[in-house]
Length: 277
Image 1 (cartoon, rainbow, N blue to C red):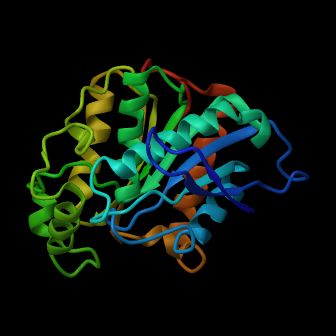
Image 2 (cartoon, helix red, strand yellow):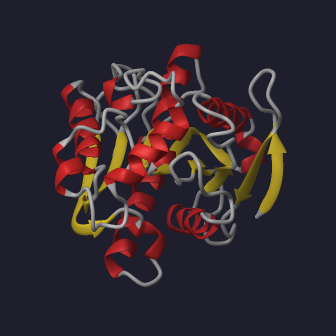
């Protein structure tokens, strides 16, 4: 593991990252490279809060993981965090040799608000001509600022993350003049044409459940391979407990397998194919 910084977006400071490389004896290269964005409502969280999750992903997938310490709201509102994540994605895509990464196996991943940033970074990559990404791994992602789904009402309270939490987080991220319907803020509202396959993990007891399912279905309806790992009865944030919850460990193993599959079956467009599960 190494802490370092990489060039940020134009006019912005460098972005701190933490790079994890797997045991070379168990996982010799070339390997997948995962650009990981942590959760925390765009306000909370950092490299340390998600250190265990990033390590677990590296071990489960045999992957190099680049964890991004993006700028956070409200001091840095949308799209500052997104621009940081995309800058790191571009850096990783240009330094795969240094990371021991296979050129066909660049992956974006994130949990919660980090899932939002991972998905939105793909929209920027499509708009700006790269880098090519083989897979998106989204874990209980926040994808719709409208916050008007049935799960927002059914699971508004009592399941760790509440609807009130999310209202506050979105307000900090977008600010008073933000546009909730902007696809870069709400990726579920974007045209998914040309996006890579997906592995989407959703918790059954979570206000964000329905938007994760909707994103998965939207990809499939466009002909993009997406695997949905829906876990009824689980709560937002459960992946952090992979060391004590067997079902969380199973989910981690599943996303590790999905990431590893990019080595031989990776796709860098939205065409059907690949093995995202």
